[in-house]
Structure formats: structure tokens, C-alpha cells
Image (cartoon, rainbow, N blue to C red; front, side):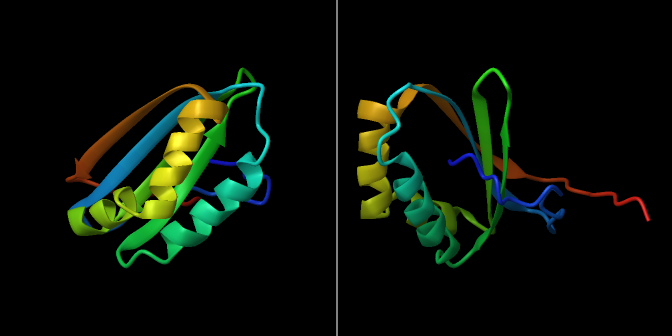
Length: 117
């Protein structure tokens, strides 16, 4: 999604499985007009999806962006995938903002976390 400069520096907590993840890895084009605004709108929309649990994002210095969205169930993921504004943003992304991307959808069967105290 965006450069997420205001994103938390801690990963999203581990959730009770099963749940789903959507891993979106991207290389963006030089043309980014409208990207930030659209991205902000997509983040607003996905947060309103019942069953959306949160997201992590990372960007490498070389330009690889990785966003992981967490969803309680397949229905929540389907609701996000079929949202009309999201679909329009996907089309614009392919036309303008992404050189290439990969999307992986997975069902999480095991999850745990650690925090140094």
C-alpha cells in the first residue's frame, strides 16, 4: 500500500488460528500520481470490513513493498476482494502504479508471538 511512514514499528499481534492472510508484494512504477490518496482510501475501506484484523507493511530500500492483511475468515477476505472501490483501485494499480506484483492468500493454522519485556 503506501509508504506507511506513520505505521507502527511493531508487527501485528498473533491471532488465534485459523485465520487468513493476504500477502501483497509489489514493485511500483515511477508514475505514482494519485497513489497516496487511493491507498489511504483503501486502508479506510478495509478497516471497515467485518473480520479485518489488521495489516503489516514493509518497504525495502530497493523498492520491494510487502503488505500483509489479516482476516478472520474467508468471507471477510471475499468481501474485501469484491469491494467495487477496491476493484477500481486494482485496475488503476495495474494501469499506472505497479511494475509488478504478487498476491498470496493463505490460511494460517499456527500463530504465536514474542515481546521482550
